[in-house]
Length: 85
Image (cartoon, rainbow, N blue to C red):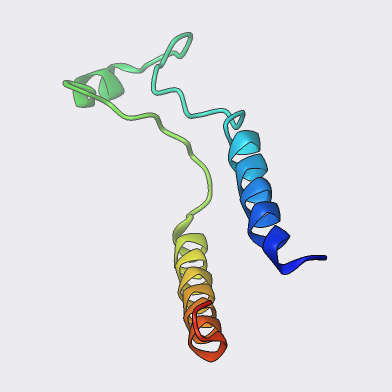
C-alpha cells in the first residue's frame, strides 16, 4: 500500500465511524406514560432530568480518559520519532 493512501484510508475509516454513530439513539428526557407518586411529584418541581437507573459509569469515564491519554501520548511519540512527516 502506498504511503500517500494511508491518510485517505484513515479519514475514510473515521468518517464511517462517525456516520455509524449518527444512528445511535439518544436519551429521551420525557416521562410520558410513567406513573408518578405524590412524593415524586412534590420533588419534581422545575426542570427534571431523565432517570436512567443504570449502573455507575464513573469507571468507564475514567478508563476512557486513560485510554485517550495513552493514545495521545503514543501519537505524540510517533510524531517525534518519525520527524512529523
